[in-house]
Amino acid sequence: MAQNIQERINEGIYVSSQKLPSEYDLAKEFEVSRLTIRKAIDELVQKNILFKLKGKGSYVMSPQKIQSGRSGLQGFTEAAKEYGKTSRTEVISFKTLKTVPETILEALKLTKGQPVKELIRRRMYDEEPMTVEKLYLPELTVEGLTAKDFEGSLFQLLEEKIEIAYSHQEIEAILVTKELEKWLAVPLGSPLLQVDSLTYTKDAAPILYDRSYYRADKYTFKNTLIRN
Image 1 (cartoon, rainbow, N blue to C red):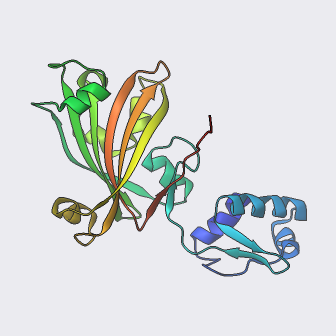
Image 2: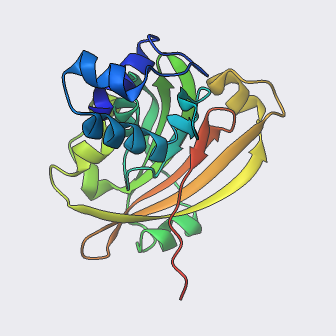
């Protein structure tokens, strides 16, 4: 039921700041109980799609940023689908590095001389540039693959051979450079989120080092912090 209401929001039937029909009217329209409607609304409130005003009803929140981490470890394609949006990937380059920076070798637990592939992609969200990814993988992990293969979900592609378990992220605020201005279509000097991620298999082996640049006006991150 929550999905039905969210689809109406995505389709513009319910728009930003609009008050939803009453629980009674929604229950009658969808031919379900008021309890079912109440649970659906509570679920959408938890997702920051709706908000409630006591005694006044439920309202659609202002257009939200994509929230990475909202549903656990997801790729960009999976996150866009959850928001009811389309995604598209442009491969800018895919090559074997002639010289691998020490930071990448160390992160991937490789020794000097072991080949590493660099994959640079631009991710589109409803045909709007959203993020640029610079990805580094051991060559053996992507052996036999071509640039064309990376136009979809990277996680789904990797999981054909490897079980992905978790990822560590570090987030830093930076400003748009000339290179990123061209790729993301945002003004030079605008704020960006630089995210360095290291993704591991269930055996705690690092398989993917990712430095991505996200538009700060469109993207936010949600993390769970556990107090020791």
